[in-house]
Image (cartoon, rainbow, N blue to C red):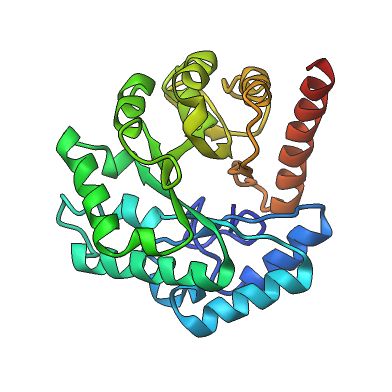
Length: 272
């Protein structure tokens, strides 16, 4: 995920690297990555090039130059500004950002927008989930090559009940295996419950009810998740959302995460 190969900004684990995004795409290509997930967050919202047509062209050209795909965006701005709370960005602002992201897909191609409804944006009621749908539909979601992946802290059966009533070609689930580990969810239960609606996967390691940690040091059951995803023949993204290096060795940290996951994939692909 974007920012993992850049210096920390404002001591935030995850934020758009305003001054480093081109260098990050280049570095990612040099160390064996083929894809990057864009980030749109509140503190850098005024300097994110994906929100204007000139910037979108720059992003498209940079990705093309270095052989990096970019077909998913994590919408942290929504998590930071849920419209049912009094936040920095108004509902009108949030709608405008979504509209600009939808428009960007016309040049960048098919896109998954990950909408986190966790932490500050945890749903206070079921009605709010359908209000989010109304907002997305209102700003023209169906007119663009966009799919929405909801990342939630709801129980698997609850989000599955919501999703089953929505068209699968438009709405799905972003599985965050680290967050699931923190909530002590069962990988097998999650995949059995809504595996057919998973359209994007965030890989991180977390402790139970605790923070993210280096891959291999937490409670995320990577073996069960990877085995389960292979069994359902999942073909979507696997996005590394790894912990940041305390010594600012961010490339080393990401290479460790990359190798950890590739080793697991290779092991379970052989076993399958």
